[in-house]
Image 1 (cartoon, one colour):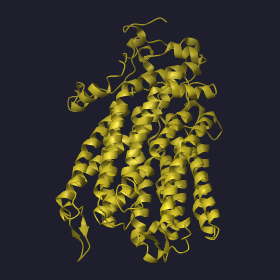
Image 2: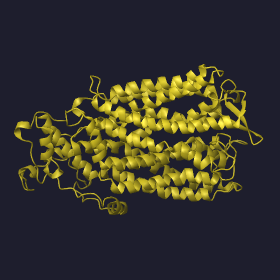
Image 3: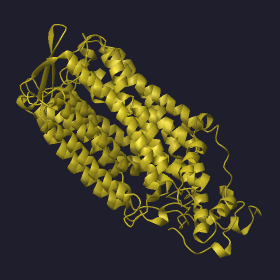
Image 4: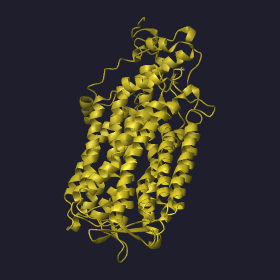
Amino acid sequence: MEEKTASSPAAASSPAAGATVQGLHRAKQWQIALFPFNNAATNLYFAFVQFFVFFATMSLTGSMGAAVAGAVLSGALVIGVSTFVSIFAPCMRVLDGITDVFVGGLLDRTKTKFGKFRPFMVFGNATLAISVIFMIFGSMLVPASVMWARWLVFILGYIMFVCFYSFQTAVTRAGQSCLTNDPKQRSQFGMWNTIGMLGSIVLVNVVAMGLLPGVLPVGLKGEILYEHAGETVRLFGAAYGSTFYFIMVPLIVGLSAVYTFMAVMAIKDKDKPEFWGVSKEPVKAKDYLGVVKGNKELRWLVLSAGFNKLGSTIATSAAVAFLLFGCLMDDYNGLFIPFYALCFIFMGVFLVWGAKTGGRKGQKRAVTQFALFAIIFYIGVTVLLALYNHDNPATYLSLYTLEGGFKLTINFYTILFIILYGCGYGAFNVTDQMTIPMVADIIDYETYRSGKFVPGIVSTMFSFIDKLISSLQVLLLQLFIVFMVPGLNALPGEVTPYMPGMELAAIVTFCIIPMATWLITLFCMTRYKLSGKKIAEVQAVNAVRKAAVTGGMSMEQAMATWQTIDQVPPEFIPVKKPRIDKKTGKELPPIKDNFLDKLYKKIWTRSEAKIAEPSVNAVPIPAEFAGKAELT
């Protein structure tokens, strides 16, 4: 291969800032905003899964008909059902991960007139609705006298739910790769995904854990009583009553369908062959083994994101919310929704900050920076919970009281908690949200590394390990709450009383486990090499290869011709806009590294190879392969 020096014509002609760059394709802003609602559509169901255990406790014990008046059952029966679901749910998560791999392979082979991704979105959403309706309402139709049939309907419905869940979730990560390859646009996914979270996970939690427990009359709430150690123990809550499910299931099914339609419209113009990668050859089974064996960055990202999700799902679970706001602070209904609202204000600020950081400096930088921030703030939260004393009201969270009229009762302890927890909540959500667009980077990197476009298998392999790790959630909650607190026989509910030992359980589940997972994330990022500069190289090399392959060059020849960014012609490389002084119109010098930049470079970039300068050895596309097609 003949090399060109920096003074060669190819290197000397650089596209002006803002000029169209070949191979760089962007989405419209409304498409970037609406596509994350595919994630919101499935997150509605994901958030509702935690209530399956409550449904099973009510339905599978035969107490459905007696849910209003209450039913006296044996303690072993109730605890047995709860334990069964706690074990059954993680097993189903593992099955879900295995299904993911199958769905990923099917997705990579799919090419229809309706596109590659949209069939999976529509089919997945429709079957999710059918499975949940069958599981919940089908169980209600089976008489309590035929208990084995009630169990069978629930289990079959759950298995259907798990198998079909993968069809739509696979598209959330995989579809980004064809929606846009602009790093700045990809970094916005987390920000818009948060809006989707407000209308999915947050909505379900607020309605199911805040609104319905507060507004449903006592006669419509569920109540189960059981005998334990000679005493009658009361399991009480909206989720134990059939009215709860008659409200929640139609809400979730209908809203999820609307979100799916929004996402389908967003990806409609991009779900076409010209955006489906470089290679035109069909994907083979050996390509999947090659992804696992050769793509180290995928493995590090999967490990990081899986543990990160495990920590966040434990800390934000219903059981931990009941434990913290109800058992310890004795005001669940007065604290849960206000704290949720306050934390989302913090999260909005942090996600805007995170999107800008990811767009300018790369997704890896955003993940490491905000994981570090989350740990720092949660150290403060841990200290506050360690200072908690059940006999000292000054260490209780307090916002207001309605006795004698509305009065603010906020104290110094609460103010500190809001600041530290709000900032920590915002920071760890940036870390969590940024891993989603990083999967699109991995898909592009796999194309760069092997020449194969396998978004389905990359995203679903990611999901497999992610779900395998996060399936530990229920088991860990049982271990560090139920088994840690003497006398507690089930995960906390709305009216579970305070018991000694709950302080330590709250510290472990709310703080220690999440901080441990963020430390794992920081370690994984020291090994993960796809920095912002490396992704820029990947995009540029993929772009010139695709242009040449579209013109008739073989994929093997294209991969041998362009391997690093110094070989890429300048018209395929975006140029950063210079910083201009608005008053004088003169170009400003580059911004100097701050403390965080220096810390990041010292710790998290040591394993990264140095990136060559763009186009110094540029190899133009041969004339016989040039000018046939371009992406704009």
